[in-house]
Length: 211
Ligand SMILES: [Zn+2]
Image (spheres, rainbow, N blue to C red):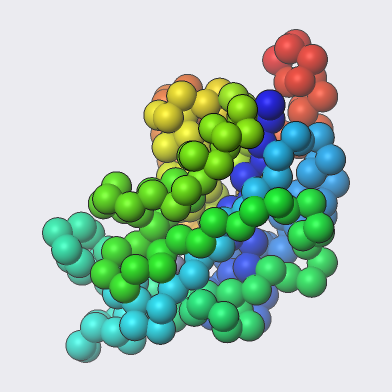
């Protein structure tokens, strides 16, 4: 069984959102075009309490982009984004959400961030995604969405480490490039870890085993 995991395609990461990922909206038509290829389609949502420690505004005299320690983990400070139940945490209207059978919320605990769709950054809590995929008999996962160099990358790395045959669909993902070359380096990290980085037009070839 093959699963598509759509990572954090949420209004706050798109144009006019609070944490804009350049060209983030370009992933939407690509994801809408490929979702029919998969047996299972799930999504993640960044879903933070307003008091979340990844927000610069929740630290005294700290700016967006600074790195602090939260519970012994390095934490990049972001603008407040994807607060649970806010408009910015919603899926954009043009994303086909009918095919999404389950949504996994991440970053729900105030004092730890979740870049991966599977676990928090301290690997203490899991989101239930792995159990769900196991219950569906999923062996192959295809990861796409936002941001390529953070949540897409860490989800793909965890999927691979959990034993899934793992693909990252590059044209269905966009990165933030918080540091120059983050996207390029994320792609290298994924490839080195045995994740196949593909273009959506290669899917049929991948499914037929020619890839
Ligand atoms: Zn977040």
